[in-house]
Image 1 (cartoon, helix red, strand yellow):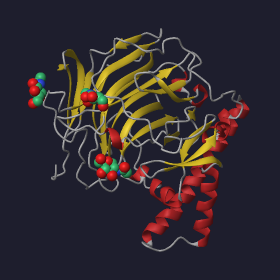
Image 2 (cartoon, rainbow, N blue to C red):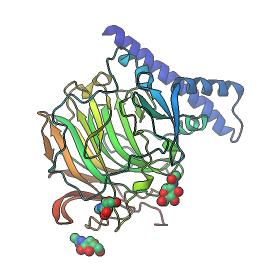
Image 3 (cartoon, rainbow, N blue to C red):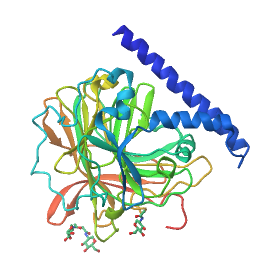
Length: 397
Ligand SMILES: *[C@@H]1O[C@H](CO)[C@@H](O)[C@H](O)[C@H]1NC(C)=O
Ligand SMILES: *[C@@H]1O[C@H](CO)[C@@H](O)[C@H](O)[C@H]1NC(C)=O
Ligand SMILES: *[C@@H]1O[C@H](CO)[C@@H](O)[C@H](O)[C@H]1NC(C)=O
């Protein structure tokens, strides 16, 4: 155990050192404007890319123009993590719980998001799709804004969320939601998205959709996950941690074919994060709980056991001095679920593994957005919706 801890510290130091080097390289580069990378900088970036990009079994192009490498399951980035060296994970792994099954009481009128992301057959079983990282990606990623704070009182992220009332004795083994997918317009370093977030202390896991040109290099609405375990944090699999088992659905999958039209056809993204009996936190997609992968228990300190906080809703970011981008549908809610961006089917899993539909929450909204947790009708049904969003400070909506 003490050896592992030391290894882990060394690993953290290596990451910090690498980021520091990159930071200096790239900030130097920014000062020089268009100056081309020097030979030394170039060598350093190539070294990073070699560590990050694993050898591909097959390369797949999606209809959105993304190129994915199909990486052997056992060669995925997660297993570079010193705490995951001696794992016995395999591509057929399922969450060790009986509670993950179709729950017919959770019905929704929104359509599922499409997962057909490739025309040429996708990745074979035993591999996972991973987007190839380029030099431009590395340079862009270095400009990522600071991560979302757990307390909502930082100056960076602006939210409209609803949450379970905090109690240090809360014990959550998971949560889920069905959120409408939109494509709010963002520019430059802005981002805008909707997500489910579970945390305890300094450990956080999140999943949802976001428009984030800094992360993705385009303004498509894409699936994302994020984790923070102590000082290690990243999106998708940009750093070692998340173990992907699904060979068909990439973590940064474009949702471009399933963008809702306000007042028209609506598309929902159903996400669940659930802790199994081994303590691994699974990321599951859609109503049929399609397994995408999991964050192994060994990554965490606070989330080794149950979570204390769950929240749902929208998050945006703008660099200081830049007007805030639109959130959700880009309109304020009007209490009509055909028009409002929403999160519904909010559910938590209690420590006994029972799924409980959420009917009481505490809402937190920052200016200039709005959010409300309310019983509303959808078709012939009445159910709880967290309706949220707004145009932000943009003038062209
Ligand atoms: C995304 O969808 C829009 C609208 O349907 C379309 O115009 C655009 O070409 C799509 N982008 C990609 C990358 O597929
Ligand atoms: C869901 O998709 C089906 C088939 O494409 C369509 O007929 C139906 O109207 C859609 N439902 C909603 C709520 O958009
Ligand atoms: C929501 O808007 C639609 C279309 O305008 C309308 O038919 C429906 O009655 C509205 N629903 C409510 C609850 O106001």
